[in-house]
Length: 124
Ligand SMILES: CC(C)(COP(=O)(O)OP(=O)(O)OC[C@H]1O[C@@H](n2cnc3c(N)ncnc32)[C@H](O)[C@@H]1OP(=O)(O)O)[C@@H](O)C(=O)NCCC(=O)NCCS
Image (cartoon, rainbow, N blue to C red; front, side, top):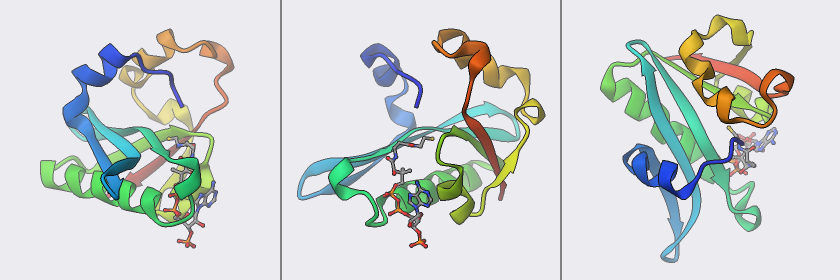
């Protein structure tokens, strides 16, 4: 997952959904619109102790509902957990299928040209 500074998170706070358990946030996920027909799931993370209990599925479901409500038909993520996304109906695609706009984050990433993340896409 790409590092995000507190300033970056605050600037984009309205893009986040969270899962709360007993008043504590145990998962988060951001949906950012990238283009007229494309949005990106970013910063999807579930507390280590709460993994495997459905929080990730809930967060991705909420992001997909948000995209549908906004009329954005395609949602993608760059991930090291492609099988989790496949279970949510995403398909693995070539990164090159995604527009150049996607790579704006890459300039801030330490991996740059050695990116090992896998692109997954769902058309809703
Ligand atoms: C990936 C992640 C968000 C999954 O969250 P989670 O709450 O553990 O997932 P859920 O419990 O909702 O799992 C939903 C389904 O996906 C499966 N699943 C969960 N993690 C999986 C993984 N890493 N690989 C394959 N399947 C996975 C579950 O078994 C479950 O399957 P089921 O529908 O057959 O029961 C979580 O493991 C995480 O925070 N990982 C570290 C950060 C990360 O990699 N984020 C993604 C970056 S975009």
